[in-house]
Image (cartoon, rainbow, N blue to C red; front, side, top):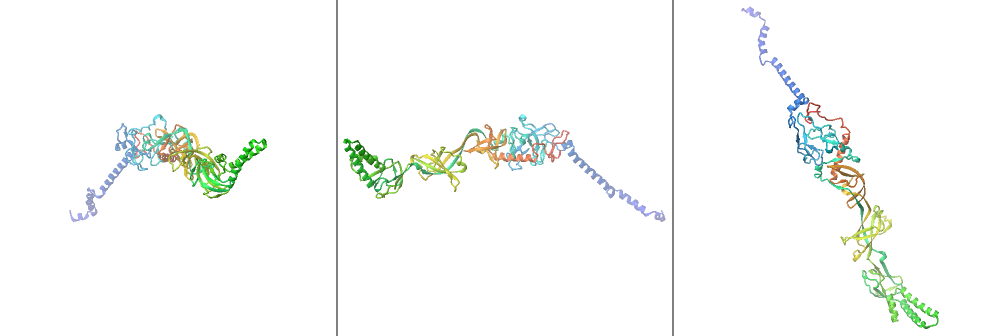
Length: 542
């Protein structure tokens, strides 16, 4: 070809022909990029379809996520629970998410695990059909409920809620506000240390203890006084505290009046002897009257009969007259010495009989209202521990003490061996408000400040809270006026656990709307059909 022809060929044609094979070659930019994006789009589409099938096609979910037990077999698994929070349940060992205690295995109470492809088995009814299942509650979030058994995000079983837990035990007794029936389970009663005692009908009284002071019985205190003027010649009782007996000589006194009276009596007695032969009756009566008056005067001066008899026998006037003890007791006062001049009405000695003593004790206003004269009392002293003496209420003072706001009560007790000494402290106990009624141990009662709660053991680990009215308390027992009947059992141990659990259950029930249907928000239910079991917690049914 000539150069002219070569020159006539267009240059862009040659460039295009040369560039064509380069664009079609493998690894070139245009067609290779298009195929890459097509493949990537296909892969993403398959992944998206797999995710949609996993969450929406039950058979595909079972194929990729098989469950133990085969297609048709239902296998039982061990269950674990918390002794403090029985509604916490788990398929595997661990710790309680609330209190941190180690979960314990429930013996003989394994829950069925539904096999893949099998329908969810209906919840088993309790023995006897006495309890009605309402719904299941999320143990960690009580607002989330389900009509069928389910699991939460941690793999914990939902807690079943029964009608009797919300409304009571069905015995016709309304539960106190803020309380719910507690289902502990018979196998965990001993584990939690819960003990029960039977309410019985018996007599109960309210004991009152008071500290008193021993004082002498004022009716047994005698003062020896002089009725004539004279001088103490001799003292037979020389010190305070000396024991004397009735008729024992106390002192010898010289008195001119006593000497003159002795002489008058002797003269009058001699005149009676002389007038016996007189023919005049008036003279005989006059002489007899004078003698009788003189002798009476000696008696009024407290001259002992033995001294007068000796005076009549001897006919001699004695310089001193001996005075004897009027009663037996202890000399608690001595105001004279030998040689002391005494005047009429002057206290010489004080003799106190301590065979019976008084104890004066102070009682508070609410205690004193029930005290009655003649009530029995027991006495205990520090000096004579263990020796119980029986006495009685002898007197109740009519006025209160303005300083201590107490009422003084006088008790009377025997005092053999003089073990109770004046001014000694003593403990007095007496029983008040003695009644007969239904009695339970005092430890069965829980004081809330505005009411008293007792938990009645209904059997099979079920405890029902009841509001009770308490009457008389004493000796570790309490009278129940209403709320508990004789023969029923009440919890006396671990009451605080039942109290806290009952309040917690009541609060959770109130949050979920009580015993009616479960609240509509956040409600979970099993997948609709196709034989797929409940896979809550794995994304299977929402």
